[in-house]
Length: 346
Image 1: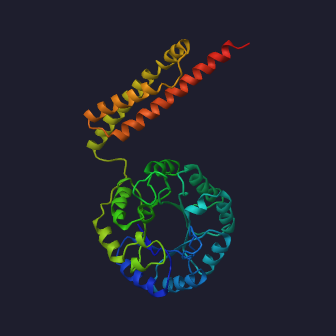
Image 2: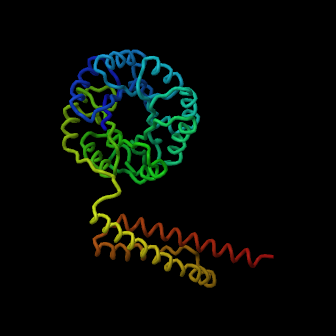
C-alpha cells in the first residue's frame, strides 16, 4: 500500500497536480497532507490550517480519494472530523508525550476513524507501545504504525536513523498491526528514499508513506526529501515486494533450522564462557585489581576484530558483540563482589 502526498498542503493547484498522477499507481490508497506543521523553529511554514482542510475536502469529493491528516491536539481532531477527513495520524513530536496522546484519545471517544501512530522522535520503543496501547484501551482497533526513523547524535547519513531493530521490536508486540515506513523522513534527502523503501519491504512492511510535491525545490517545507509524482511512480515500479508468509519453501525452512542449531551452539558457548567470570572476579579481588582492566579490554577488542576480519565479519558488528559480552561480564563481577561483601558483613 502506498500513502503519498505533500509535506504541507500549500494550494489547491498543488494538490490537483499531485493527485492525478498518483492515482495511476494501483497501490496508491491514501493521500497524506500536512495541515498543521509542527516546525522546529517559529519562522518555518506551519501549514494553512482550516483553509487547507477545505481544499482537501474538495479534492476528496472530486477525485474520490481518502485523505489522511496529522493531528496534535483535540482542536485538530475536531476540525479534521468537521471536514470529513478519513484517516488521522499522530506525529513523532506528539507520540513523545503521553499527555498529548491521551488528549487525542479522549477527543476521539465514540468516534470510529482509522488512526496511524508514528514512532517518537527518539528511540524509546516503550513510548511508541504506550501510545498504541492508549488507543487500544479506548476500544480503537483500526490502527496502524508508521516508522519514520529516530533522531540520533551519531551520524548515519540519514535525517533520522532507521534503527530497524527498534521498529521490529515494536512489531513483536503488535504482530497484527500494519507497519508502514515513512522513508521520506528517514532519508531526509530524496536520493536515499528508494534504498530505504526497498529495505522496508525486505523486512515485511505493509507499505510506504512518501512525501511528494510537483516542484520539490519550491516546497515550503522539507524540500530536500520530497519526490515528484513521476519519481514516485518510477521508484514504485522498481521496488521488489516480498511476502512474509512463514510457510516458505522447504529449502528456506532447512536453512532456518541450520541457523536455529547454530544459535543454540552460540548460546551454549556464551553460557560456558560466563562460567569463568566468578573465578576471575575472586582472583581480581584477592590480587587487589580493579574489575575493569583497560589494557585487557583493548587487547580483547583488537584480537577479536582480527579474528572476525579473517572470517569476513564486519568490525563494527564484532565490536558491538564484544561490548555486550564485556558489559555482562562486568555486571556479573560486580554482583559477585557485592555478594561476597554482604556475606562477610556483620
